[in-house]
Length: 339
Image 1 (cartoon, one colour):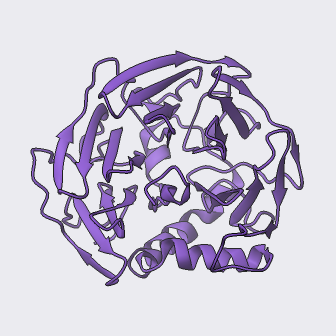
Image 2: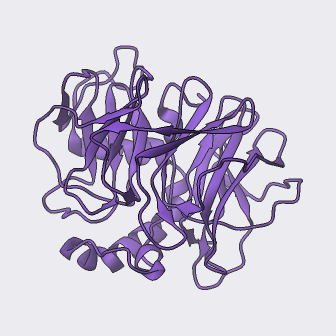
Image 3: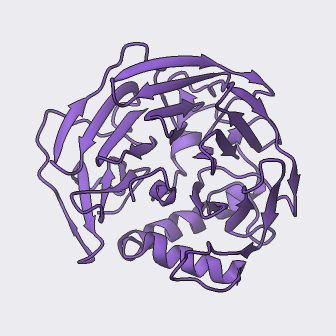
């Protein structure tokens, strides 16, 4: 059934299955906690997962490691309005649930940013807290997936303003976290966290700078940070899909041209943004759009006029959740994901 605010990763025994967890039902339909989409057979199923996890959460970010373990931290329950700071772990290969440590975990939150680092840590940043306030990014949290342990880092530098609903990706060389957009009280939308000293800075940027947005998705493909869809921007001015060339740490470049990697077998020419949009939608999302595309377009068109006028202040839970679009996560396009 159609639902929104779910989260998904690519996993399974052959790493060719999309696992969709949680979310909010549309029209009070009954839903399974987990769905699986076989990208080879182009079909949906409900996997039989063992374990005691039964709680449905939404507006959280799933991270998958190279063993097919899907990490689900925190989130929100639309059933009772509660926020969480637990760590659920879904083994997408053996189909069982595990529970991670909550000792020294971040405070309960949803709509945060997260990324898997090369040293087997997951970094968590910002979000929306259980008192409906935006969380500071001065403190970032590291979850050790090997030892099931939490650590906290206090950051320095030009710390971004408190925010939620932003994107976070690992830079090309594994030494930076790049965040973009979000629900925010500032117009600055692009920041970088240096993981060597945990210092924030605003990178040098060239090209036509787009307006900020929230509820979008971001992935690293080749030398580009792909930013797709979202809300809070004018689609007649900005493209639905943005390209940021992050290959040079001294200067990032907003561009409309995708220069594919030299080892790319599927693309051999420089492509304009209009072609990229078609390819990204077709190849990254693929068959899932057949089932979920109608929901995305319905909710997008319904809220488009309101969202392009202004970004509402997150003073109430309804402001945050009523317009949340479906999460179709493709973070594994990054080389540090499960390829």
